[in-house]
Image (cartoon, rainbow, N blue to C red; front, side, top):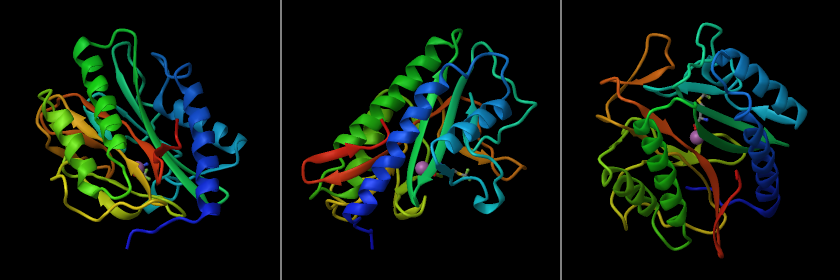
Length: 248
Ligand code: MF3
Ligand code: CO
C-alpha cells in the first residue's frame, strides 16, 4: 500500500523541503574547483544542523555522511572524501535526504564547474527536463508508470541512457517508502496515484550505456562505460490541484 499522508505530515514535509531548498541555494557558492567532497559534506552537515534538519543518510546501512557527492561518471552514492577534489571541468551531483520534526524531504542537484564540457551541460539539461516532465505526470487519477514513461521518453529521445538499477521512491516519515518509482516503464500501468501521496522523483541518466556498477567500497555507483552521468531529484506531493514540489 502506498501511504496517504495526513495534513500534519504534509506540513512537516513542506517544512523539511523548504529548509532543504534553502540549503541547496547556498551550495553552488561552496562547490568550486579545489574543494574536497568531504569539505562540501562538512559544510552540508553544519547547514543541516543550523536548520534542525536531520540527515537520513548518516547511519543508513552504515553510511557515515550527510550527503552523497558524485562526480562525472559516478552516478550516485559517491562517498565524501578528503582525497576527492573538485576539478575545473567537473559535473558534481549532490544528494541530500533530511528530516524536519520527523518528516523527510529528498533532493539532488547537478553543479557544473565553469570549464565543464558542452556534453556535460546538455546532459544536465536533459536530466532537468526529464524531472520536470515526470513531475507534470504526478497527477491524482493517473498511474505511477505515467511518470516513469515520460522520464524514459524524454531521456531516450535525446539519445541518453536511463539507468535501470536505481529508482525513485515514496517518502514521508521514512526516507524510502512504497512505491518504487522506476525511471522507465509503460504509461497507464502501475498503481493509481492519489492525492496525499508523496514521491521522490529522481531521473538517473547517462551520456552512454545505462549499465552501472557498484564499486568495492559498497556505495560508489559508476557507469560501466565511463560515460558521464546526471542525477537530479525533487520531492513531490500529489494534490487535487496538481503536483506540489516541496524541494524548490
Ligand atoms: N538520497 C538518496 C535517495 O535518493 C539515498 C541516499 S543513499 C544513502 O534515495 F545511503 F546515502 F543514504
Ligand atoms: Co531519493
